[in-house]
Length: 287
Image (cartoon, rainbow, N blue to C red; front, top):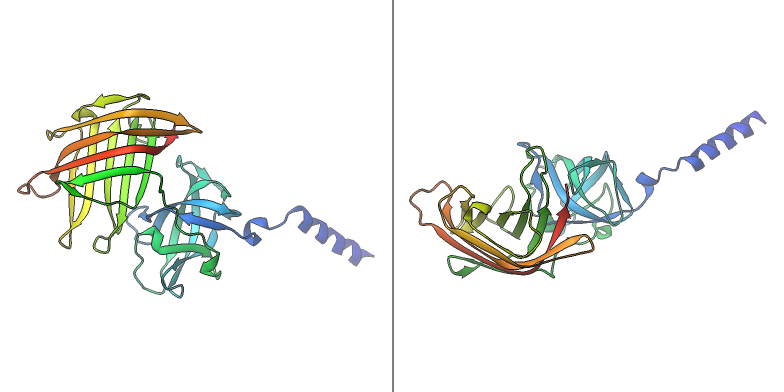
């Protein structure tokens, strides 16, 4: 009888506290890029969308190369943040979260920083259970660098409508366009990033004191970075011709033009950048 009571007690305890977070199947889609958290090549983070199930802190995972699933690196999720960079313990289906990874690169093969080359799966799981990389297809933008079209394959936009972060930066719209690059490293991508400093939620024109741009490209096999911030003398102007909000997101149309100097090259000619955009979707952060 004592053995029976002990058996029943154990059974009830497992029924009350199931190990769902570890036994449940999950699937996530990756954004375009892994980023280094600091100076450690094996300390990375990436934005993901949880498509199914629940993913938890301290969970062991594998980063699997899509083109060759036998190439995989183990890692541990040591932290999960929401998209406002506030720490949370789990990410559940439907949530967009940031995963921080301690990578265990015991195989010693190079890990590229382009997210769409990889899947993240449970340790030991088949890569077929993963979801393909998230790609935004509804956004529309035309980008010219020195009169030549530059094609992007991924866009992400944010609108920080109040002071945010440790530095309490001013309200701004952040537009980021990227494409993978076999030439560039850390991260392995070309990127055009635009900042418009504003707290106005309506059409408006902006002068150069409110605008910044950084444009990183692979030029003849080498990295070249064009940049100007709002304190630089190079000309810049922008106009948002349409601003709407729907379902917690903002949508903007307009045009951004800027001169920019080449980073670390005082003798290089300045660049000219033009971006025309329509109906770009922005994540709203009212903080």
